[in-house]
Image (tube, rainbow, N blue to C red; front, side):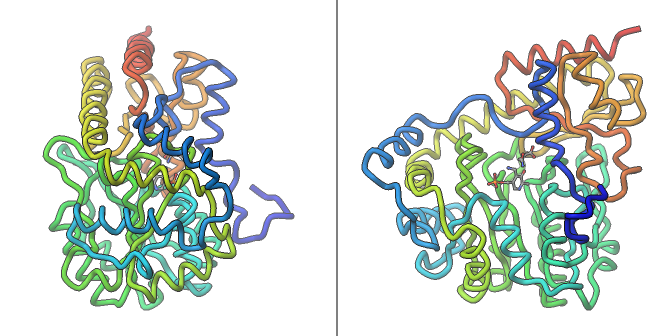
Length: 391
Ligand code: PMP
Ligand code: GLN
């Protein structure tokens, strides 16, 4: 990217890989295992609640902090699931998706030149949000092992400097599927306290964990509530990624800071959808559990078929995603693999290089989204296996 009209701090950013890959899927008619969105909509009662809210005239600006019904529902959910109590009046802020919550937090907390510690690979909007704030990212590598991705505690310690302001954590983690365990969270928490960092945690896949893995919020650890901004959204939990209803929970002084930014980015939006997500948070726990089980089965099938065909699949403990090694397909460059896969096999994947600073580490990794229907996944798996076996 070398666009002279784009501010220097954003010149590394072009079109997001998700937009690019979804466009490629549309253009080629390929099955889209690229962008992480489900191809069916969420709980009927949640969809109906949105229609009803529009019919009832909930169509003007919601309050800047979000509708009080949703702030109450979020506070109840955090308390019920994690034992973290927040005052819905002052400690919950509704945002335009988790994406806005993350960007507004970075803009609120970072001075130009400050540093943000982040685990690599990382979700693409993190690098952009850090750059918008004029801050620098310091990446700590997640390395694959047979039982999941791990980090080196010393590398994390080295990544934190006197300039570090925020530790940006995503668990369950996109794209590795890693669910950070308690021991790892305790280490991260102790470093946040030792260096007086704010923990910004992206928990959008909080319900989508598999096998015996469970999500813990770092805000529930001793000494962390007062320095954590816990972010989530309704998109993944209720299969409504296009609604962009997100939220954050944090002590009042942190919420006040983020609200200052947020009110000048979007002020507020999505009133009817905010009300509909209340229905989800209050009454759809069983639906979400069925979604989780179904995603686990879909993960197992896709992973099983690819493994049986000799493709290395990295174990995903949560989220919508698994990563594969592209070498069994005859490629050693995932960018080329992902560009050519729709043409040769009728499937779209995302090159994991989009999530890494060190492109070399991700050179042979691609991400597949398994949040698609059983039929789409079965057909995609067959196409991938045929492609892997060709020649
Ligand atoms: N964080 C992660 C890790 C994601 O995968 C996504 C994609 N949905 C988001 C944030 C964005 O969430 P939202 O759609 O609520 O803005
Ligand atoms: N979170 C989705 C993914 O990781 C993409 C969302 C987007 O397109 N920005 O695939």
